[in-house]
Image 1 (cartoon, rainbow, N blue to C red):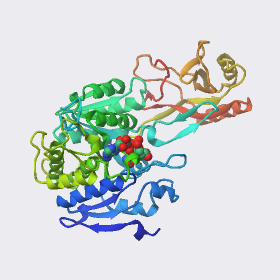
Image 2: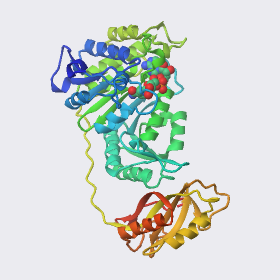
Image 3: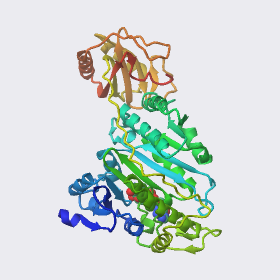
Length: 510
Ligand code: NAD
């Protein structure tokens, strides 16, 4: 398929120019229906946009592009500042990569912003005062997609978290709070368990919070934080968190607010940003003309604000609120008390257009404030630090005999040598040698820690350690001795001190 067939250009009347040029993809499932609705409303409101339309999603996957997007479409995406995307279906089965994750990571869309507001009583919600924003890290964490099966019994997924990634996202959350008049930013992590990865996110949050004394900052462990979001969302304002937790809690908050059909989201990058509804392609109701277009309309309004057209966004959002208030509802919002007219996608679209210029009587009208420049946050360079090699974790695939950890330990004591001594063996993170418990279940996956002879970790909890350095050649010699003894290593992780501090976890019960 040629570029010309892939891309059509549609001009809309009104204000155009570089800032008004939008890449647009209808997506699939209900995508075409709700995108046509959003485009009609944008045009009627005088948004003045020009569109470069690209194809993404199911049909592109099935044409043989495993990431759901053709190489030509990337050129268009990179040319424009913003991308309005309909939902897409990821075909079932192996070999298909999630296009959403690919786009977010490839274009550096580091912040996923998901406002969540209740429209009670017109849309049923237990929490009429709920009005919060989830800001989710969008590029790192378990979404790197680096997974391996290492033994017959064990698979692993790498969780990667970087200081620049944390800092940029967390600064964005505080800048967002300031720009939109929000008073509090809540961080959620699981740093009681993941002390290095989630611990980094939490410590960067504490550092950045000090630069914003006008904004209240607090932290919750993600489990109680998610429970509180489901139980008392009114106590939250802006929530900032890692990728996986953000994915989960933003669906909880959307559902708790009333309907996943209402939420829009922005994926913010330093040059390009993408706007989409939070829901998926809803194949169960596709082509029936009954989908609620509100999520995509709200996403389009976030895009207008980003493009410096807050007045148009405000007009559209207030017309949408009037429509809800007048009881004109799509099926997903239907309720006996407040629905006066149940409509399909087209009827809902017409109702919003008829109400452009009106303000809601009971629901709080949307005020976007003055036109503001997009929030720009650049990560600060991280100063290089002294890095000292002090040992190695060798992961073994071992299923001999009755998997007795003491047997493996005694063999490894013999194999250790040079500057490296065996410190401990763990199985799925539980210490099994020395002094393991016979009750501990052991898989075929063993982490064997070898450290420098003179290693001594401070017990003060400061993370300071005073180990003698080892050489890379000590590690390769150890691996060769393991191979010679018929012990199969799956992978190794070097143990370092960085900036004078232990840069690895001690393991269970640390
Ligand atoms: P979904 O959000 O598509 O649907 C969940 C339920 O909500 C369905 O019952 C659906 O009918 C309803 N629903 C969703 N949007 C609605 C709307 N606008 N109006 C009325 N009802 C609506 O989630 P799913 O069924 O788990 O996923 C379907 C497909 O969408 C999957 O292939 C998934 O990978 C994909 N997906 C894409 C995105 C995206 O493109 N950003 C996001 C999530 C899921």
